Length: 324
Image 1 (cartoon, helix red, strand yellow):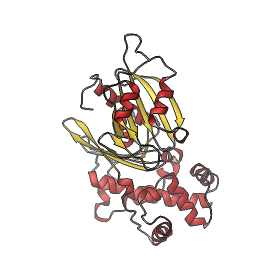
Image 2: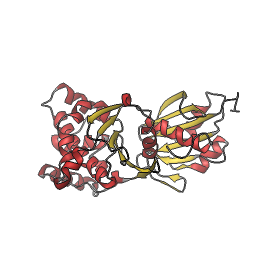
Image 3: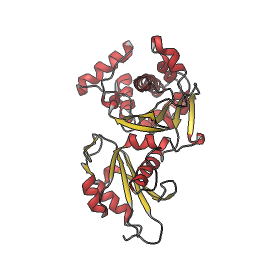
Image 4: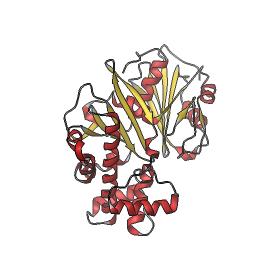
């Protein structure tokens, strides 16, 4: 896998609980050269899937950034939705590099959002964007990821977090019943238990009293019949998602915008654009007016985290300045 030709290449990866997306970019981190998507649970380690991807191309990347759906501490991650331990040092050894950047996937997602144009965003609420305001990303997919972009010195500092595992705070009698239903099963009930793909299935089980179909099937049921159990589950999900997104926006004073990432929002644009999501988002008492002014958009480009990872890898290779 020796580097061939004058052009350096960068490896970017976005590894989630369902899919692992790997890509090669040019030295700027802006031009995608090749990409592949793998089923995460079909592989036993990050090193194995990276080797598989690179085996198809006679190239050794100049730098690499791996975005992982889990907390990262000292170059190491033990994701709750993936049965791997991911270690930057082991990845570097597998790639023949001095180091590999290992970051939380929402950190990469947030970096990628800075590179998107308006065509890759679906507007939920136009609001009144503050040019120098902070921004946040709240991504419901296999899990629930959250990150902040703090405006600083003409650019943004990205703050990754694990707020999806914070305690679920029910707001209505129905949500209190949902909490009790899940607490009996799980003990601790986090926002991820109700605001993710598995969370949507949990809500469906709670409402139906039986088994739940897949999240995709629930969305399809809701689209086919507005009076169905799937539509009821998706409406409650949207309300909880809106309330949580508003909490994150308030925590960061995100007057620059809220971005909904992950796989669920793009598949349910009409549900999240109309109704329960925005009602819950702005229902914050004395600060409701502030939230009404915050723009909300859905990210419809599933390569956003890859773009962010490529930007981080480019910085590592000295190709981009540190400020986004």
